[in-house]
Length: 295
Image 1 (cartoon, one colour):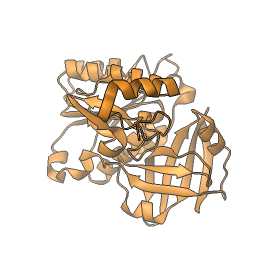
Image 2 (cartoon, rainbow, N blue to C red):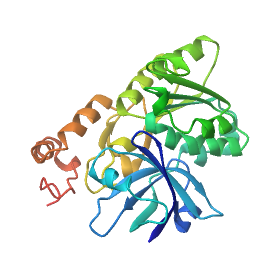
Image 3 (tube, helix red, strand yellow):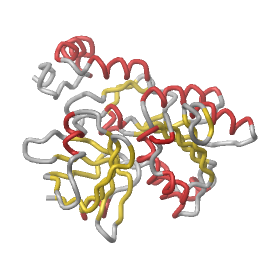
């Protein structure tokens, strides 16, 4: 069992938990994720790691209520436990695995949308701990939905807040801030954008226009988290990838976002999974057990 040491609601429907998971904390890196399960019959829920403390043996997760599983998770309190807390899974951020001297020579921009701020934070924190400043744009619909502002402010080189309704920080979308920063003379060697699929799509359209190489994290489309269900199948360039085992980070300028978002909706129904199985053939996977693609 994995004890929950801290549980609180950050803002409407977004929750933070600190979990005692010594083995995961010992080996995880920014960019990776875990899978939690509340009990023997519980849903497997993949969540990106928000923070970790190797000495204390804890891992911090942030999640948003999007279905029955996360709704039940939100009811857990400090002192409760998870039945399973599996990880670390996925590949770490390239900023962590690339030679440190190369990373230090880069001018880095992060773009976080909504709950995507949670997986951005550990990467910015890691850079800060290694003497590397990065600019960070955090976008939210309104001020009330903004999360981890103080934590991000402590580790970002420059933090730019934007809200869709102008209730806090700059008014408008994160794409407008990207354009404004470049117009002001900022130059970036790489951008890391994490958030809703639609936000990452338009962030990539903007950075491609500005000739800024961009990495995105496709954790929003993961379901099973092991590569067996096939839900996170995505086309990157001319290759079929699965976000949970091949990523979750990919070259954003090569991701076929429209196809991924359309597929995400179709995959939710049994009829849709059958349609995708017929259309995608051997690249479908189908381990969900519902469409017959695993037989």
